[in-house]
Length: 135
Image 1: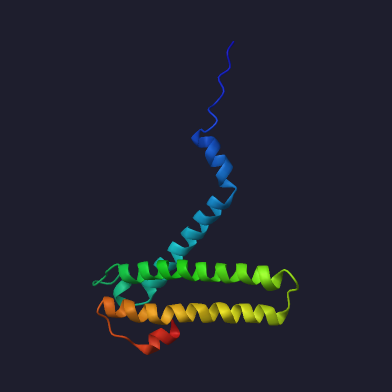
Image 2: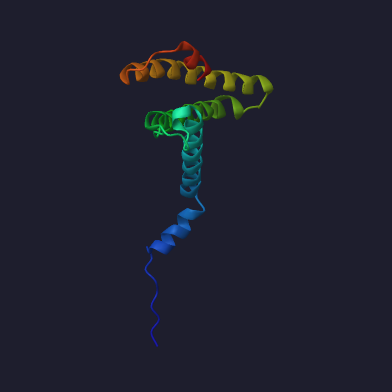
């Protein structure tokens, strides 16, 4: 009687190894990001409502939201790693958390304002500082 062992790198074995790890976590984060981006971009303007006669899919807003959220996540992650190594490893205090949050917001704002202006100029839109401010 011969027993056949499954290959070491079968698809099922690879899935089992990565399903519990960080790959599945990133897939879940990506699905949440895409769902939130779809919902928010569809309720942002009346032209984007599904039941409207002049419906159009908000490609620009959808892609900008996804790219911007990814970059915000990278900025926050890099800033957190810096604070974790320098400040959070010693002692976590309210002042340190406040400085971390303020610096993260400052980095994101410094990134967001010029990128938003450049994107508005590239797509031929009108620059409204009100929308930049609330963004």
